[in-house]
Image 1 (spheres, rainbow, N blue to C red):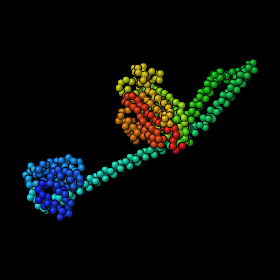
Image 2: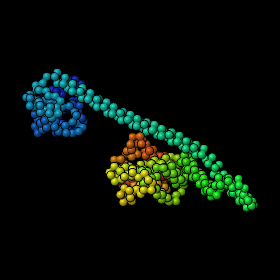
Image 3: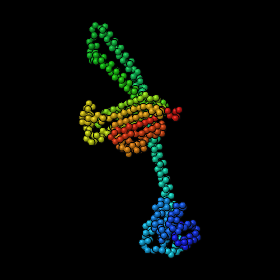
Image 4: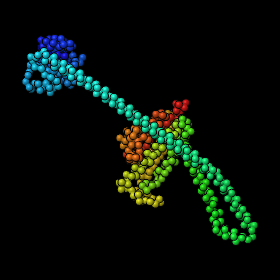
Length: 451
């Protein structure tokens, strides 16, 4: 485009550029030029400076303020050849300055040079955009690959763990059933032996000296009192081992790899049983209290083993959050729990803390969401809580606030995949720093695959 208020200049420049094969548009003033460029963007503008109403400087300034036009190269053509005008032209965004009277060859050479620069610049911008787009695409692909790889590794680990747990449970189950099943027989046989001894003692008027010595050596009266208690302890221990075996078998769920209708409470209780050692009192904190508030729920169609992993991850995070809170109290000088080696020492009496709410507490509640035909599991703790920034990244892979080696940042991400992607449910976290955390899990009662 050529902008000049002198028709003769327009004609000369137009003819010269048309002969070189260029398409040319002209404008006699600044307003016409503004209207023209808005209709169709030119590749380059030849602009005169001295024009009525709006001079070339003003027009250039207005052009550079329009986003889609500002990058179009502007070559000033003027009879003003002093340095100040040239500096002003370049300052306002001009790419070149041609002094009148001009030479045809000079104008053509400069026009060709700046058009070439403009096209190369556009190509470079397009290449940069393409490279940026490819880089972002590669980055997304890499992240997806890392996520898939991590999920495969985690799935393989959990599968191996499930097989190990199921194998141990199976191997323990047979001998413990043998022991448990024979305790009653041993008790019966023992009572029979004692009965025989009593009858023999009654029938004999005088107990031989050798028999008396043996009775005294073995302390028969103590055995008669203590043996039933031993048998009772063995029975209680065997029953406890059977319960643990059942919990392990329920947690592994190897025989229920597909969608099955299960009791959600069994999975939660299994995770709590396995984590029982983490809930016990330590030198740094009192025992963590677990409060269960279960409503009557129908059986839920789900991948039971995967949901058990979700419950386990949520409960582990709750315990870690409570321990973090007590560590902060310890560092702030409010706790001397490290000095309490004796289990019978009252934690709050020793530390001087009187607020019983500072006890570690985990609440697990369930209820039915009738309008949605879903069950809701809420796992709450009174631990350290989270900031908004942490909550924003909570379900992202590899994000963790735990110390190096303690967490890999996959637990909550996998939980999100299991709940949202695989079960079409919802999972969200409610937390404030110092106010604890509440994890809300919503699972449909029926899964589409199982209908």
